[in-house]
Image (cartoon, rainbow, N blue to C red; front, side, top):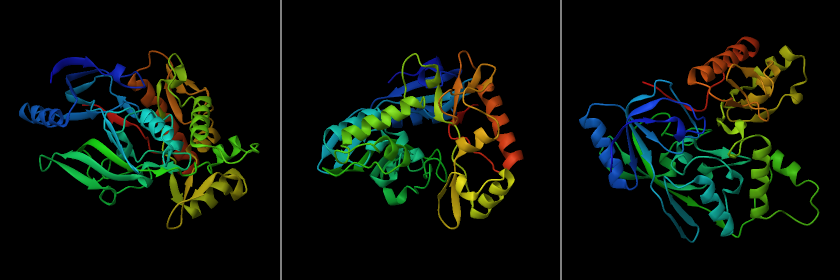
Amino acid sequence: MQFLQEVPLAPYTTFQIGGPARWFAEAVCEEDIAAGVAFAEENHMPLFVLGGGSNLLVSDAGFPGLVLHIALRGIDRRGESLTAAAGEDWDGVVAAAVEAGDAGIECLSGIPGTVGGTPVQNVGAYGQEVAQTIVNVRAFDQTSRAFVDLPASACGFSYRQSIFNSGERGRYIVSRVEYRLRPRAAANFAYADLAKYFAARNNGAPTLEEVREAVRSIRAQKGMLIVAGDPDCRSAGSFFKNPVVPTTQLDSLAQELGLERERIPAYPATDGLVKLSAAWLIERAGFAKGYVMGKAGISSRHTLALINRGGATASDVLSLRDEIVKTILARFAIQLEPEPVWLAA
């Protein structure tokens, strides 16, 4: 295992933004993870664990500690169980499951990043989320200095959250994830975008392969599929979480906009709460697709994606973020929360 100095981080992120890591190492096995943690501790420096870099914005100054890049590989399929190492490309894992005829993650096709990030963010899209399939997460526990197996019930999954990015943030380093899929089961295409895509179909329900390709096609149309040379792909995907608010706030929003409540995109949550569309709010606040602020901007195909238009810095993206958040708060009294991880000193 090599420990390198002053390694630029921009090439390791889909934003293609960020300064250098003071130290950088790549973990290709579990022993490397433990060694990386020990190196950071012995040298009294902060540690950051890097996966696919698809949900990350790195400071222009870079990171003053050790960036440990998780590159463990391997996929094992046994019956309904699919176990993948944390460094495996997530879309590749979905492709393998669909090819084998296993349902449960087909709607998560095209999501950039690696397996290790899926339980951290409780990745979800088009009516599915990984919490519905995860059985076990194997991780290095920096408190006990040992690898542990965490069942799904111990992971604290909720909308875009888990113990890994909230209550126990920084404690665990994921090395492997086990998913329980459904062999020979029907594909899920109930989500609105997919239902619309297949609305004209008259030859039965779509197959897993067809749903996967539909999801990838829809994501591509929204600039949410990584395609080389596409400027809309220099982003971290959806930059803001869909806000979850009390139902009473939905009434206030309808009154503020002079709209019938039913015309506002809202989805039932729990305990008297509803989930609003962040993209819809942003557009209503005057930030259209293709909006430009210097070298940063909003994707020409998806309002939620902030992009690097070419040569943008992290400061450029943060300025655009702050302008959007400030405007939404002032106009609708709703606080938008960024989704990407912010890496700085």
